[in-house]
Structures are given as structure tokens and as C-alpha cells.
Length: 228
Ligand SMILES: [Ca+2]
Ligand SMILES: [Ca+2]
Image (cartoon, rainbow, N blue to C red; front, side, top):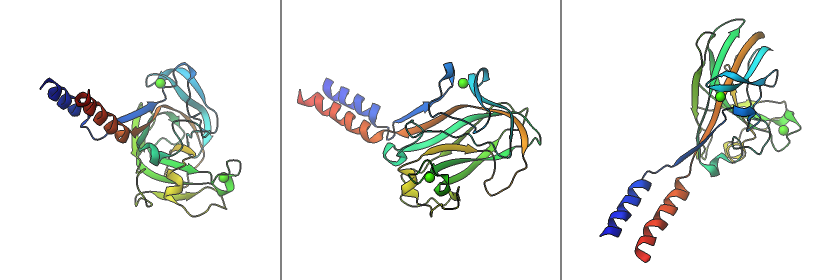
């Protein structure tokens, strides 16, 4: 009887279908997993984040800030489908911009076409969710769902060529080998005037689902109670 109670207790713990895990880059102590950068001026500063350290860009002249990961070895890139990636997000602050306004915010997944040194054949998929804050709004958290298990191109995602030789989009090719994760401060179909920004990001994060491994280990634990 006691074993049955324990077994039911173990099952109740693991009956949750999804066991989410995540990684959050807080930038504390100079940490920067994923080598996040704005592709312009940017540095990790120790105060003023959400909380603590954050990645700041001051006097940044651009039409569209686009913080991106760099390198293909971090938790933020790779085979999203195998890992069961479900969501990504970040916190954003805009301290000043020449033409203050909220912007649409898009998540971008970049495919380098296995030629990382040649951007002419790079492309991305994006989806707009929410808006970046205007100056004075403080920190804003934005999150995006990632349909990593979709076998076809998701209806609400859009293809974006990044070079003249970009091939047609292929969701499986992209989602099984994401080369860069990014967050685009604007609608990629619009043009924006260059302006001077003072902005920052904190806590870029990625979440994935380890339900497959978890359910296997939980059943092994239950069986072991009766086999001993
Ligand atoms: Ca922080
Ligand atoms: Ca390329």
C-alpha cells in the first residue's frame, strides 16, 4: 500500500505534460551567453537594468535597433525542434530616441544557409508581437511563442530575405538549425528614418520543453518501486 501511495505521489509530480526549462541572460558580472549585440555601439553596464546589469547602446544612430545573438554554440541557437523550444523573450528599455514612439517588435530567426561568412544568401523568419516602449515607459517585457514542432511554414510568420541570393524560405531547415535569434524594433516591411537612440535590453531568455525525457524518467521511477 505504501508503495502504491508513493507511486501515485511520483505520478502526480510528473503528470504535468510539459516540463519547461529556460535560460535567462541577466548580463550579471559581464556574462553574455549568446554574445548579444546591437551591431553598433553597445556595452554591458552594471546598473539600471531590470535589475542590475544590462546591455546598453547610447548615441546609437540607426533606423531600427536589432539586437542579435552571435556565434552558433549558445543555448539561444541550434536545433529548436529537437530541443522543443516553446518561447523566447526579453526586456527592453528606451531612454531616448529622436522621434519618440512605440515600435512594433518582431522576433527574428536567422538562417545563414551554412555560409556564415557570406550574408548574401542569409534569410530570416519573423513575427511581430507587441511593441517596444517609448522613452519614459521604463522596462517592458516582451515574449514570443516559437512553433518549433510545426512541420510547415506557420501562417503568422513572414519570410525576410537578407541578401540578394537568399533562397526560398524553408521552416524545417530554419527551425532545426537557427543561426541567430534577434528582436527587431520595427515592422520589417516599413522603412524608418535614421535617428539617435539610447536604449537597452536585459534578460533575453529562451524556454524549452523536456516532457519527453521527464515522462520516461518518471515511469522508470514508478516501475522501480514495484520491481525492488
Ligand atoms: Ca540584468
Ligand atoms: Ca550565409
